[in-house]
Length: 196
Image (cartoon, rainbow, N blue to C red; front, side):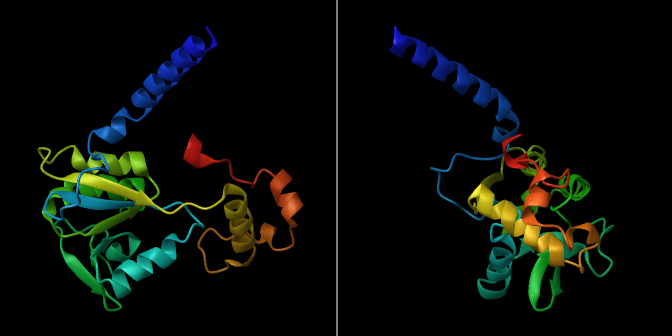
């Protein structure tokens, strides 16, 4: 009886998970199929403070991949109506921004996925990014990958970053003199947005 009950719980959980991720499956493909640049666009799910910025630098500067992120819309390209590859500091980027929800919407309108211009798109908005593949007649699918870090170490790293990141547009000096314990108990401590 115990095993039957556990099996029922497992099936129920699997069904709930299938329903939750149905939106992702519309454009993202099973990992066991081989990556093919003609039929796939790599989607990097950027979880903050997990090494993503270093990975972005590596992929553009060392490997020479054409990326899609906020850099592509710098230098006045935010409202471009056609897709093109722009060069910034010697690296190449498509002129749309997949790091924001509005940018993903714009990229979808311009048919980024089927354009063949990009090697990898960076985003923290995985569900939104999956919609990039819903208007291209299923000719191009996403292949998602990520880097993860222990959640406590990631949260601590974020806290120390918030204390010193005066260059960020949303910098808040309240963190400057705050202790880690005060941060953990404050309204400023982030919730685990990856699991919600």
